[in-house]
Length: 168
Image (tube, rainbow, N blue to C red; front, side, top):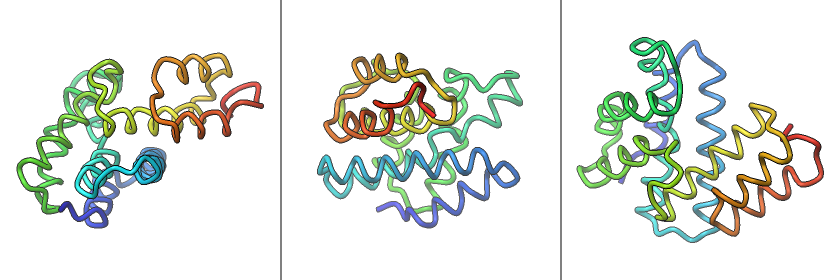
């Protein structure tokens, strides 16, 4: 089992001096945890999901340094190499690490899988990005139709944004 508390501390340490990114990863983690619990993931799947949520954007600094961009494709490309040693330090076994790294490497590729853990990570990230990026009501509605698969995620999206003019 991955030590989630240790991994969170490592992720926060990695993003030291960048409170916006720390806030983002913690919010995505919280939504992933809650959605996963409500959707009744098993203990191992939940643990790996939470680890991936904490590290999903860990490649941003490398993407900016190497590519001058923090776009999703660069995050996906650079994230696994940064995440792997953190997962090792938090006690991930090879199977746990492999799955967490796959989730990190695909978290902006919306059609990569229909696996529940993957869909939950996408939904949690969207819920946070919708607020942080002040997405329009129309964008939120479209995402609800195209991205969201879980009952819990759809409910949160609807409850958070259905009555607002935008996703803020």
